[in-house]
Image 1: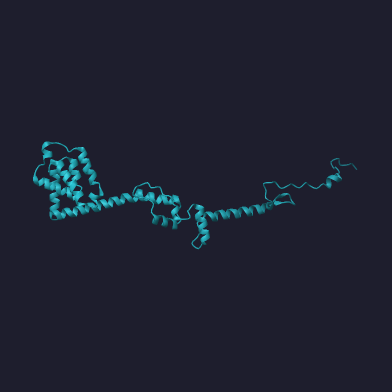
Image 2: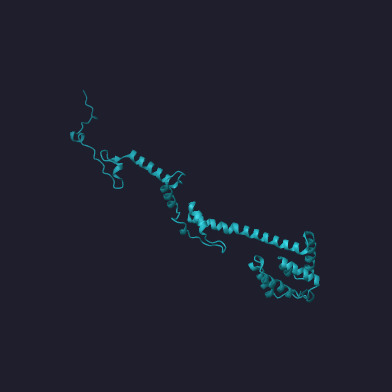
Length: 248
């Protein structure tokens, strides 16, 4: 019988050789290494990864209403909420809107971060102040109109007189003077008295008031003592100043 030349006898030493076990790499923790097999513990590695992912997700999610206080505090610290409301540092971007202890306390109770608290003050300056200023202006204007209605004997008489004063002012006074005096009840009353007395010297001479004097009077009219508290002496100075300018 012919011999199969492809059949090679196994070397006895080779048959008894045991595969060399791999050593654990330094970067692989022992709990993830199977020393007997010399391989990674895949299931343990995946389990640890899933647990880590769960913890990270829980840390970033806001705690529920029934969460323990310790968990709430841990979350607040994680997102940057200071320990106390006094630690908020607010950049004052408008002279009328500065840090307020009560607002800061409410913000801290709500869990606001410093950046969120800054947004609160910025919104107050950018959005609320214009609304408040407009409302205050409308209130003051209506208060001035009420005084003029009383001065001229009612709504209808005031309307008729106002048209007469406006027409007379356009014909006899510089536009800037009429505009300035028309913003307050005292100014309108002063215009009415000048109209009743006749054409002012200023109009006959065709001279304009000195810019510095007029600018000073306008500045006084923007003073809270003039438009808000209506201090009699201060208002009188403004009214008399315009009378001197117009020769009334």
